Image 1 (cartoon, rainbow, N blue to C red):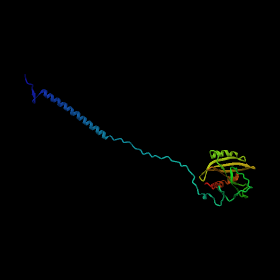
Image 2 (tube, rainbow, N blue to C red):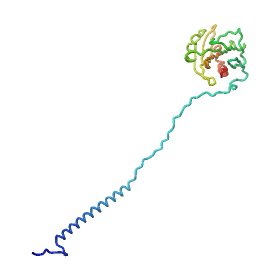
Image 3 (cartoon, rainbow, N blue to C red):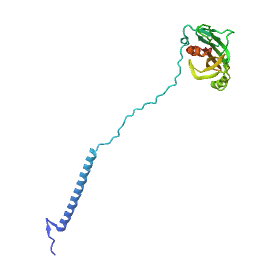
Image 4 (cartoon, helix red, strand yellow):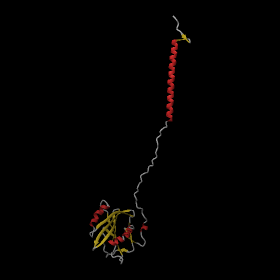
Length: 236
């Protein structure tokens, strides 16, 4: 039996096995190199891609504007009295009027609304410049009903002289809430206006009224509105 021919001391089978292993090794090296190169490229691609960061936008938040409730600021009482005015005072109330007013006497015809218990009645001093006499009065009542407005709703429909209420509103008198009422009426074919301020003081309701013939009423409205600011009770 002839021996198998050898090359480089190896048989053909041995050379074939070595060649096969070398081929497998070459394939492994090529595949590994390809994967390494691909991974490197992917790494470079990832590193070159900028990281997207969220954009923070500053928002200016303006707080809601609060509208405060305006409360009248009290003014020192002495500053409310005009120069040359006269003081009229009882144990319960105080009020100031111009120098052309005086305490009414028993002969003075009271044409005020006659609401409540009289406390003060003042009349204008007769003069040639005034054809009609103006009056100012202070009276009081005990508080009745559920509220001041409910009390007034019941009281004013029974006014004398076929009077009618032409204006009624809420006002403040030196920080005190009050009702301002204008009443129109007629006596002896003469038209009059009666401006009444209604002020609640605890369980007492005060009425401060100013009466004048309609033309003189509007000529003296500023005097009346200044006078009511000087009104105060013993509890103020």
